[in-house]
Length: 82
Image 1 (cartoon, helix red, strand yellow):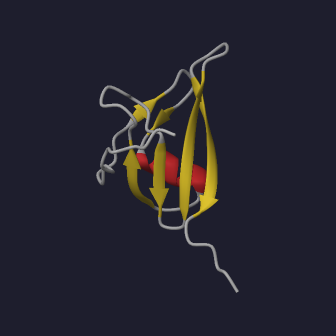
Image 2 (cartoon, one colour):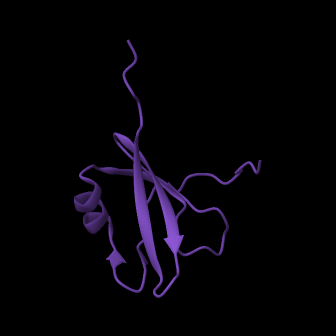
Image 3 (tube, helix red, strand yellow):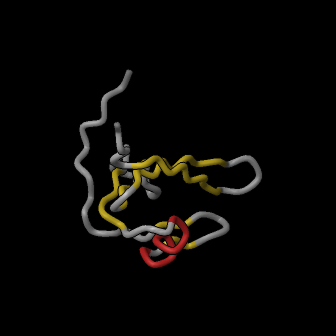
């Protein structure tokens, strides 16, 4: 299993796909939460692999079948345990 050693980026970096330009405002409206940090797997990546919000960790998956696009999976950041 590969371990990521990159540091999260605290300031937002705009990125785009073939269908969307992702600004901080667009992303926050899409996920319904406030941006915290993002992580790029490789230094030359234009799209982050993970984005943290106040309440979620968002996993960003790239898809390039017909067009360059992404999917976002939201996982609760601090699940409540009984």
